[in-house]
Amino acid sequence: MCASMVELGTEICPCGLGKPYSQCCEPFHQGKNHAETAEQLMRSRYTAYVKHLDEYLLRTWAESTRPVGMDVEEALSWQKLTVLKTKKGRQKDKKGWVTFCAEYQIGLERFKLVEKSEFKRDDNGHWVYVEGEFE
Image (cartoon, rainbow, N blue to C red; front, side):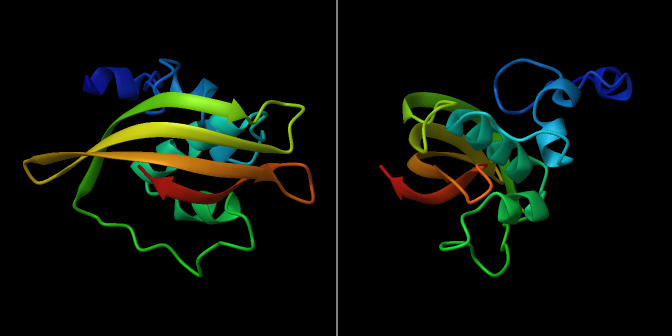
C-alpha cells in the first residue's frame, strides 16, 4: 500500500469491503460500535488478526470457548479475506455461520485457511465468535 494513503488516514480496511479502516472495522475495535451481523463481526475479527489486536479478539470470543490468552505467530502475515458463504447471522438472528477463506504468508510461502465459523449473541445481545471448523 502506498505510504501516503496511510498517512492521509485513508488506509483501506483489510476486511475486504474496500472501505477506509476508520469507517469500517476501526469503530468496532475501539468499542464505539458493535457488529450488527455475524459477517460484520467475522470481518472485524479478521482485521484484528491482521493488526494484532488481541484484546478485541478475546473480547469478541464467547466466554464458554475463549482461550486465556492469544498466541499469535509474529512471522505470519494475513493477505486476503474472502467470504464464501453465510447462514443466518443477520440482525434478527441469535446464531449464525460464516464460511471464509483467509490467505496468509509465512516467509515466502503462501497458504489458505478455509473455516466455517459459528457465532451467537451473548447475554448483552452482541455477536461473539463461538468456534470454527476447518474445511
